[in-house]
Amino acid sequence: MSFNHIKDTLETICFFKSVNITHTFSKNDEPLLHVQFAEEVQKIQITWPQTNKKELYNDVDKAAEVIQEFVG
Image 1 (cartoon, rainbow, N blue to C red):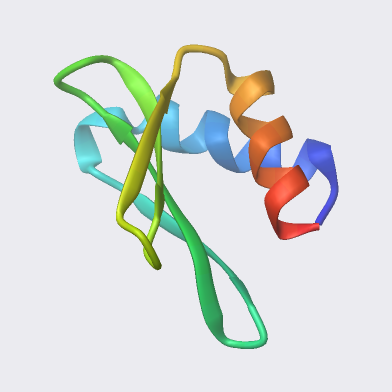
Image 2: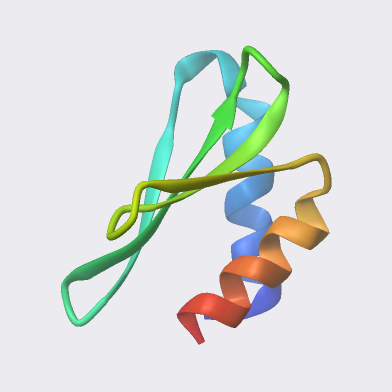
């Protein structure tokens, strides 16, 4: 998946922040990570379902870099 496509997805999630959209990135039908806008802290939240680890990002570009690196 291209960086620009990931960034567009994140920007859409942020734009519709009051709707509570969660996007799951998968590989071979296995969920790799979930992304949503954490409205209570106004940040992008990435969750790794295997460990339930959560990270928050202020910057769309930085979050997109992390996602692209992880999903390949």
